[in-house]
Structure formats: C-alpha cells, structure tokens
Length: 356
Image (cartoon, rainbow, N blue to C red; front, side):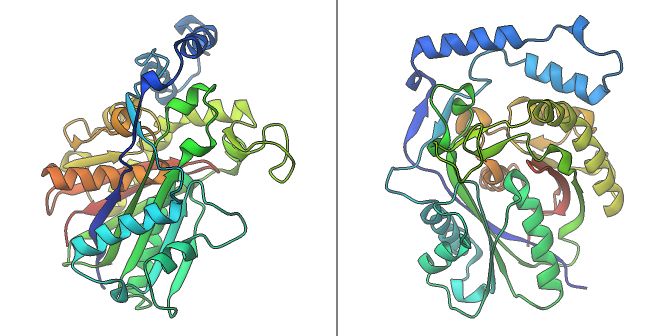
C-alpha cells in the first residue's frame, strides 16, 4: 500500500502589517468594558462542567487584554484576491517540492472568504497557475478544519491511483468582512498556504486520522448578514447566530481535542510520549498550550503563530508546519500530531511521520 504525505508547504503572507494601534483607543476601551461585563467568575460555573471546559475557561482568562493575545496580523492589498494569494503560495510549494504544475492532477481549495458565491472558487487558482484542463478541481467548505479534510481526501486519491500529486490550497481574507468596531476584528489576519501531497517513503506520511462532526453547532459562527439570510440586503460580516452554540463550541473544544488526539494516536499505534511535534489550530493563543497539556503532549515541540499572524483559518496548520520546518523545529521522521476544528461543526486530529 502506498504511503502518502506532504512533499512541501508553500506560504504567502501579505507584506502589510496591522498592529494593535490601528484600532482607536476609545473603541478598544469599549471592548474592555464589554469583556469585563461578560466575564464569568469561578463560583458562577456549573458544578458539572467538564475538565476540558474548565481548562478552556482558564485559558481564556489568561488573556484578559482586549486583543486576546494578538499583537500583529497581515492584511492583503485592496486589489488582491484570495485566489491570487493561493496561487502565490502554490508556486512556493511547487518550487519547494521540485515539480511543476503539470505534475499535479488534483486541486483542493479552501477559501475562507472567496470573491464569489455559487462558483467553484478553486478554478480561479487553477487558471492563475496555468494548469491543464484535464484535472479534478474541487472547492471544499471545511472552514478552519479544511487542512485535515484535504489531507485525508488526498491520501485516498493517491492510494487509489486517481492522482499522482494533489495540491491543497488555503486562504484567509477575513479582514475584508470584519467590522472594525467588533473585538473579533482584531483576531483575524490574511494569508495563504499550499501543500503538495503525494507518495512518500514507506513509514512516513499520514499514519492515522480521527474526524468528527456535530451539526448542532452549525449556527455558532457564520459569514452572512446579521439578523437576516445571506441573500437579503445588508453588509456581510462574521458573527454568531446562535450564541449558546458559540459558547458550547468554545467550552467543548478542549474535550474534543483530547479525545480526537487520543483516538488518532491509538489508531496509528503510537502513544502521546512518542510525539515530537504538535500543531494546533490558532483560533486563540491559549488553545495550543491547553490542548497540548490536556492531551499529554507537553513535551512535544510546537509553534504559536497567533500573536504574529492572528487567526488565518485553515491556513493555520500548514503555516505552523511550514514555519517550523523552515526553522528546523520540525524535522524528518518526527512523529507529528495536529488538531483543528471548523464551524459547522467538525474537528479532526492527524498523526503523521514527517518527511518525504
């Protein structure tokens, strides 16, 4: 059976940096007031709250500032499109893999904020890259969990002989749909990542995956017109429809992570003690630290990108893996575990043996 893994990761991060002083001081003061009003003290917590939920609340409390630990984030130029960011990341990935676009048979695309609805957005990157017509091009909606979903799909395609290599594309253009008056406008950034996926040396690549879904959280966080349906008049923004679902998603994320990681490791025949590198979704700065500790991975190397780049949705995992590999923190044959979740709601953990 062919082993399948990551050949290379390409990145594109816009040059423009938006620091915290971009937001007016009086606006930030209003955020602080709202946060203080919503704060929950320990004696107000339900007695049956799970260990993971309590760990999540403690993690949130560790970042009481209005920016929740974000310091800088990248912002794309006004004239740039999501597809252009993806194409730049793809060219970087192809160069690092030592191949051309003609060596790729499939493109899987995940664009957090595409230019158009009701189109296969990945076709735009396909055109910009000059890829031949005879290929499979698919846009997916895994949101922040898209990287794990893509790698699982790509593994199946390559093992079945339906593709030699798969190009997984991810972009975040969330600064375009964040009202500057909302606190969460400071938590997101722009950028793109691409991964070339294909056959690897036996014993390397994807060793196991644990995927989960729960549609009850579908309205926790959405992109649309607040108080209306997306096709009705009004500005589009990122917001919660069901605030109870949003709270449940946040409080459940640590429990989800620990269970998914344990299941993925057991499926791969490994233990937490063997893990050398851990990559966690960067929706918040505390998520890595808390899930790493609760999953028994405190000894593993990791990288926290949220302070420098903010939340860049499904770009987060390949960004961490790519930067860590470039820095020499993630090396060949290192057992690697990932965790990410996406609104909808899905959450996944991957176990990989790093390298080609």
